[in-house]
Image (cartoon, rainbow, N blue to C red):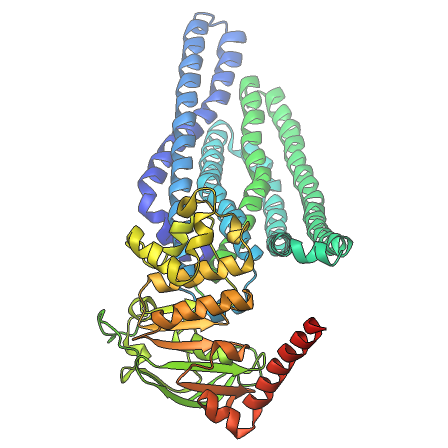
Length: 584
């Protein structure tokens, strides 16, 4: 029960619903045991004893009992559902909030489909047991306890003989639980992998079709589906093995009851009605015990689900506000990196090694280098998406840990290389970082990003609904909206991570012209593969294998004839060749 103890904060606040549900469950269970007593009185007192005047009263009593039980069942099921629904509402919110707080390092190893499976299937598996599993356990205890009390009242010796087989059923139930829990854990994990496969395929469907890999993806999905099927079949084999065994042991108890009970009826030490009541009562014990397999089934699924949910809730938060962080304040944007070294989790090599530079407030820093050189790692550390392995990062002379995360990131506008737009209006996407922005501010941001004209050509202008991930827009249009979103936050530090990679040369020129005005008074970091995007920077850092190999202005780096000059010659030689070919 350790899993349920760890998750108790989500269902204990609603214990009132559970207590009332339990009360009506006790009424139901108590009434259930009354049936055999009514049956015994009907046989012994009415049929054999000739007390026919009892018939109306027994009938009336039976109707009342049925009505009370039906009403109690309705209230109990309703309250149990309320208890479960309220509990998982809080749990689902906590899981989502936790996912928002977890750092990038957690998502580096997490699978989107698996996380979706945990927030849906696993949450529902836990809810089902909270709603009905606890009630089934209580029903088992109450019905079995009450039935045993009535049986002992009728005949102690017959009760002892009848329950001789129960320890063997208990052993079978215990072994069943030991076998079925790992099996259900495997099913949950396999389902998460299956979900991930579907999610990845749908997200990458354009790549799949472009490369004609539909059949390959079908085969990969089939492999995951086969794994899921095999785990379900294995679990079904456990059921097929243990449930008939428990039923066999239960039937042995019935044989002992009929044999020894019949002998007592013949000797006159037990009435016929009492034997019939005994027969009903023994099934009130045997069926709950055998039905305990279903309860264990629910328990095992809920336990497996709870373990997967706890993996999220107990995941370590590596990026968080320190106790002595400063309250919200305006950042000027003076950035200093001092001997910063950084290594991604589960990687052997350093992404950055002894990086040092200074970006005065309002300056523009260009970052260039081959893929994997460490450019994006620098801006991810600046936004505190990761913590440096060693070294210090200062903004306005203070460690970035001294700023609240919300304060820090609200004053850093980021345009990432991989543009993400929400399934909402163009207006809402631009104002996402600044929900209180006026329409004038939104329009101004779009104009500066050279996005206003194409937005106005959309069916509903700024109120046009975008498809998932900005479907319906070109790559360049999505990047320009992302640039407008960053501008709309009015940041002190602006980061452009290859922000114009998806636009043509002419559009890039217009955006660069607009950004010149936007960058005034803001510390700007430009990551680019095109030298044209950063040649106006106050300082350009050339990175290779996580180290700064060159630094200086555009003119200084061209004169040095180093790595920057080689990149320049390659890019402009390509352009020169294209122009010569076009002239021919």
